[in-house]
Image (cartoon, rainbow, N blue to C red; front, side, top):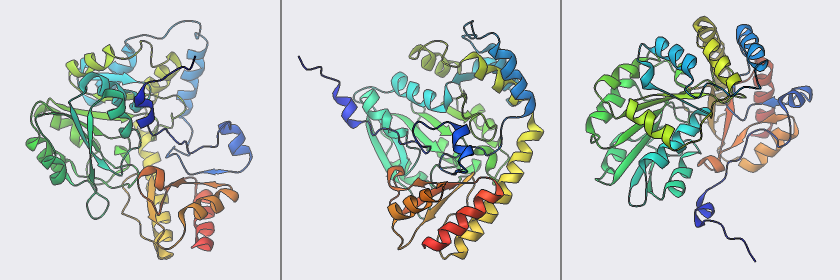
Length: 363
């Protein structure tokens, strides 16, 4: 007898990781590989966070707090909201997928820009909804007017990745507000702000004030990037209590493990460390952007911790492969929706120099 699986599996694109399969971070570092493919922080967790991880590990025989009470309180204090407005998740991806199950079903529609975060194409097949991908405007930015035009009575969910992954561009909070004004109240707007700390258009908290006027707005953030906790998978949303209850209802309990909760609860207390990481990242951003443009290649003004590089006449597959042979891992643009591009994360100064030197020889 042949086992049959749901047809929706055929529509799910599958995630292509930036790190080599079967390789631990320690082995990658030991081989001298520049891991510039996954938009991770090149800086490890704050020492106090490492201590919190160690303490939490000693109690690993116990289940984590299912409500994430301490972490939710710390996030609420940081953003001056009520803890009921904070939803936790196993990385921000989990909330996106849970939102799909909670908000969308056959007959519903969702709207997002493309190229954008590679998890968004999972939502339609998982929920049965119809997806509408709106091409980016000139400059690799969201076309909010075109997205508004696609919203109908059937639209349940609109996603704006800001700064946008993989193109690194950012929409100021004032334009997000104008967009929300035009979105009907029945539509949930998720602004995916995984890289918000790295942009310099606004204060990173500028969008928090928008929730007072738009209760259908969800702000999605993560500890994976600027806090250096990608390996622990902690994301969160600032949202209405109804949205939080909805996503909690469709996912497993204990989704954020105890060590991750302890690490994030400590990390959010170290705002000075975050500011230092952002400053160091911006220095490397300038270095990489100037170097790439000096090679005659086009890259948008990045507002994230990575650059989106148009390779021009160079062959994408060859560039990615040749860089890999030299121990420099970057993401190919084709799986991310941008053939002829690569996405490169900013690493340590010596890693960025290696990348620019190697890229220069290839293009």
